[in-house]
Image (cartoon, rainbow, N blue to C red):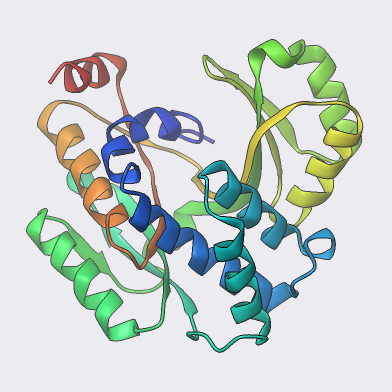
Amino acid sequence: MSGHNKWSTIKHKKGKADAIRGRVFTKLIKEITVAAKLGGGDQSANPRLRKAVLDAKANNMPADNITRAIKKGTGELEGVSYEEITYEGYGPGGTALLVDVTTDNRNRAITEIRMVFNKRGAKMAEPGAVAYLFSAVGQIQVARAAMAEDELMLLALDAGAKDVETDDDGYTVVTEFADLWTVRDKLEAAGVAIADSKLAKVAATSIELAGKEAESALNLVEALEDLDDVQSVWSNFDVDADTLAALDAQ
């Protein structure tokens, strides 16, 4: 599952965009609203909503905003109707991208995304053109200092996980897409300190980029993530350490 954790490193340049509180809140409110609409407003029975609320609190979203978003999702308050769409495309070096969107205006969303692709020298693709390269999985992040790898492996497999992967940032417990929340709950019950968890789309193989191609790919992802309708961007590219270091120094 190449690129699954390096992606967090690749996102190093995205911090300035995420520092814009209003944009972050917009994306979080959409996720809370959709999660409540699909699974109900009870966080204990709706893992997706529980995760969305945890993310909102981690970003210091006021409790009133969270409550209103939930009530709009459940229909207790009048709200906007959102739909979830995934667009596909090709980036620098022949890389593949999936762009997950939550929007109340499909035409606006596709127009803005197409403009970013065109401006950045990338190309949108037909549905199914690159989606087959990715698998939907659950990922649970655990800090390296939390416990030994062998101990976590035993607990994770016992909880129903597929694998535990290790890198410099720590451990990633990999689950089936549908098992993420069950495995997370079991690990927490076993005393594992979880840093984060998410549903992810991971490429089976990756394309390593360097130099200008790597910079162009990073800038494309940043520009897409800056759009209010875009919730997540997934790609099959990795950036080598030397290039990352050079970009950080800019």
